Length: 370
Image (tube, rainbow, N blue to C red; front, side, top):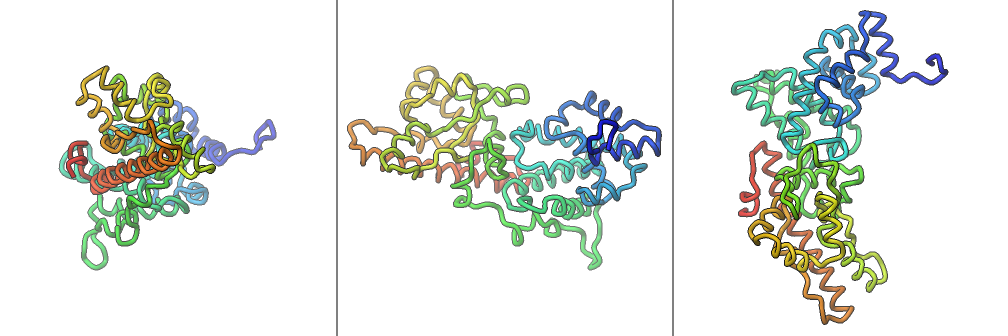
């Protein structure tokens, strides 16, 4: 207990322990980290990141037991190296247009990436190879069920496998450490999500690894705003809104006919991050109507480019033509159009994920041509 009779957190106790051992204030060190590298705290609580990264750096499982077991003197000794690792982790995520905790598919990858960066050289072939490896690791983590449970122990196992590759460890059988030794990268053991598995993934504003993973893939390509064309950035991501690409109100009309919520509009594949102004402008319009109105503002090629930057299949979005239909015909066509749109977008997302999880650089045009 502290002086106010409130239970101390694990971090509080470790702070006291370190101050007793080294006469060093962990709070002051943390404040300095936040001042020097403010981007790190966008992804998660700093005390969590410090403890979990430090545990992995000492090859301990990043959970309560592992954190208690780590040597606190070594934590302080490794501080500068850990700070560099955390700052590089934040820069790595930002380079993939993942900008904050709210859009992060899983926090399990953070300490793993940060701790690995303490073993990666600044430049050279090894640095390039290691960054490709981290790219494979991160996107594989977002599109497998690896971290759905037992995340700490699984993150530790993946970390050790990745670390052995980076350090060039030779195994007992004389073979060098390989990606097949890293569980999350072993496709025979843990396959990537399929198109069918993505079709019913929940709205990405909720805490969902695959839901936010789908949004992360769309944002990776720039996620240009539908109306003004602005690229998504750390400074504007918090101002964007979660938009139903296929209008929620239109799907609601079909559901009213079916007399039940047969069609789910709040799916990750039906979501794009756009500015609030654009979202309110779209309102309840049919996709085709919306596109026609936008074409009057700018050329068709520019609008197509903006939609493609979210990996939105434009042909399937050109739905509509519901005027003059009976309620039965309209409801069934809306359902059919929406399902066709979801399937087409799932195919685009999966193509992109396969490239990203293989460590490749990929463009929108490459995905669409495939």
